[in-house]
Image (cartoon, one colour):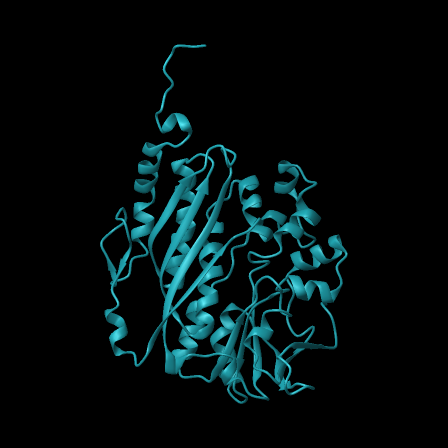
Length: 358
């Protein structure tokens, strides 16, 4: 039995405190680039501080929160070495959710779990998170970088995020405002966003070497990896500007996991359905490529992916053209109408009519 004393240093156990301090300094500039006037202090404190003074003019301010992750899209980011875009995904998945009630995102926090903390890795990921926060108009006021040696592989990591916003209760939007005859405007997605990647990887990338993955192209010449890592589009500012313009938006749906079928119905009240016209919008080539490779039918696709519609806006009949113009720069389509359900006591659902993905 050895008589040599065992080291009890935290670094010997796999946690490098000095690397953590270096990582904080590496991300400081990107984090502070997101700060709004309401942020109090800087990074490095025990808690993020944010002034609520801006709420004083609201009649009944409500805080709205949301949390999410990026899922197995991270695996493609790791394989390709492209790490900044998934940070944008992280912010978008949270901010796009909370804006659905009309809330303005205020601040964001992130959680990074790693097998071994590499300051350059943390800096790349946070750079993307900061970019997403700037686009959403929210401040990155805190986060955590946690090393999990012995639990995660040294080169493994995972991301999650948390967003808080505010809405004045009298100005909230949601299913209770939706009426028969309302128009549905579909806003284009930037691709798969951050959903369905376990199936995407199984069908398109798992059998490819890293070299083959980076060299693969779609029929239109676009590199496959570019299409798969295209970050989730942020719909925050276009929606908020539409609401600030006083246009009659009644409800919106962020199309995430569950596709159009199981997300648009969340914006409907009992007794009203969304009638969606198939073929009324453009489907990204990468999604058509996946449909063929995975041999999925239209019903399965619509239940799993956004199929080119990342955000659906339900607006009052007669106001759809004005609403359409606000979202047109991102790609907008007239995709349907709100109709009376066959059963007036049934929860609202999505009903598809005609056509297919052409």
